[in-house]
Structures are given as structure tokens and as C-alpha cells.
Image (cartoon, rainbow, N blue to C red; front, side):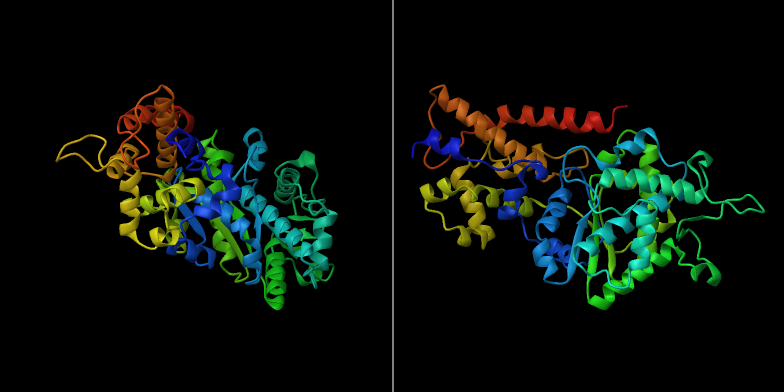
Length: 422
């Protein structure tokens, strides 16, 4: 195969995980980190934008069948792409952190109940299902946006914060009772319980017991929180603080788990003024990428190109089984240096260094983008009739510097400016 045809068949994949759901598992790095997350030992995954949080989120969703074999049910609380479910909260946000806590709990409870009903393991939960159906939360078809609006309305009724919506009041004091239908905020008296009224937390306890009885655990995945509340840091802080407090409450339930994927700069902003509950979170993972890990990621994406593997006679298993083989393959198809000289960096170190942010960290997203831009620049170079790189090298050293500005501009205009407009 001639060099230009081979290059045109080459792809390093998308730098955005949501755009490559079908192929992501083919070259995802199965690290110990992934193992601990998929085994349920990690609840909160933090990392900078582009560090791979969404890749893990998507793979957990894609591995539902394998997790089901371990009696783990996985359900997502957000759409993997497109408009975020939480967009309506921007124009009509919860009035307080307390309202947000109730909103999160109602939203998560209905998602769990819908999943349980789908698997036919709702035995003994008829009163809870009936209570949720009576207030219009639990419907046959799960519509996350509609559910969020209904949950927010009910949260306000339970708190009595919006009288025009209608809520139950004590006929003597005229004060809100915190009860709507068969759902109460506080634990009801024995007399009220006898009428079928349950507290919100009591409902979770019954659901947890039912799951334990049947030997199941359920994980609710929440990702894209950076997109959901990007327009208001105050709303973002309230949402995440409330969610962390809900997560703390759920620690009492062994069979219900939240899996939260959160950008590190948002976490730092939320906790910068003090947040006592944050110190109680121990089941978290901070995603960091070392140079060897990034090299492994790069070679996995290189080896996902069957035409290249065949053309160069590469033994994929041998390469992936040896860090030395990975370095040798990289040096076989890439130039040894971008800038020549005894004190100049090797090519991969140059790439990692040029893709680093102001904290010195390099995320996979920018590295993958650079690889694709290098490919595009080399194709354009050969289409102009310029000489191919020597021996088996696919890329001339000149294309690396010409590819870099595209990556930098994308980082600046699609991430930094939109994320930090001030």
C-alpha cells in the first residue's frame, strides 16, 4: 500500500469519548484504576477536562451486561450526549441547597424504581411505586427531563416554598406539613405510617432492603455536571454540595450507590471556601496520566488500525505486552526527534510537553487531537508532492509544529474561553 493511501486509512479516534462509543472499548486502557471503579470500590471520579472521566462513564454503561452478571444494575441519570437534562434548572433554579437535596433524592429514587421495575424485582415495593405514581413521578416511560421538572415541583410542594403550586397544610397552624400524597420529608408518626405514608429516606431504605433480598446492587451514574450548570457557578456549587450530601446519606445503603464524574477545577472551586462533608469522601479517584500511560494509550490507538498492522507486520499482543516494544514501535513510525540536537526532547516527550496545560498536566484529549492533526498535515504534505518520510516512518518531523496551533486554538476557544468567560 502506498504511503498516502495508508495515511488516509489511519485514525487515532476522536478526542471526545462521546463521539466514539462503539470503538472506545477496543483501545481503552484497562488500568487498575478502571478495575477498582468497575468493581464498585470507587464512587467519585475526578479529573481535568479531557482526562477520560466520560470514557469511564460510557464504558460502565456499555458493560451493563457484564455488570449484571455480577448482580449490579447500572442506570444513567444524564444523557450521554446532546442537551443536558438539567438545562431547565438554569432559568428556574432551586431556591436553596435543601431544595436541591430533596430534588436529587426524588430524581434518583424514581430512576432507581424505574430500573427495578424493568427487571421485575419490585416485590414488596408496591406502596412506594403507588406513592410515586400518585404524585405523577413514576411513569411507564422514563423521560429524564420531564422527571426532573416533576421532581422539582414536588420538592417545592414538600418544602412549601411555592404556595401557588399547592401543598398540604396543617388546618390549625396553617403551616406546611411536609407531606404530599403518601410522601413525607420527615419520618411520619406511627398513625401516619399506618395510612401508608413514608418518608423520602424511608423509601430508600425499603428499596435498599428489596435489592438486598434479591441480591442486587444498583449504581446511578451522574456525568456532565460541568455542562449542566456551566452558566452559573452559584447554581453549580449548590447542586454539587447538595449531591455530595445526598451521597453521604446513601452511605447507609449497601445496595444503592452513586457514581459521580466531576471535573477537578469545579470540585476545587466548590470546596475552596470550606466544605466539611468533602473530608468524609474516601472512595474517590483523581485521574492523572503519566507519560508511560499516555504512550500506552497512543499505541493502543495506533494498533486499532488494521491496515497499518498488516502493512508493517505488527504483532499486536506482543507490543501491548511490553513497554519496550511500545517504545520501539513508536520510534519505528514517528521520527526520533521533532527538534534535532543532543539536548532536545524525544518526539513523544515533545508531544506530551507541548500538550500540557498550565499546571503541567497533559490530558489524553489534547494528545489524541494532536495525533490526528499530525496525520492531516502529513497527508496535505504528500498531496503537495513532497517527499515521504524515510524508511517506515509515517510522519515527517516538519508536520509536528504545523499541527500544534490547531490543537492550541481548539483548547483555547472550545474549552478555556467557554469555561472561564471572565
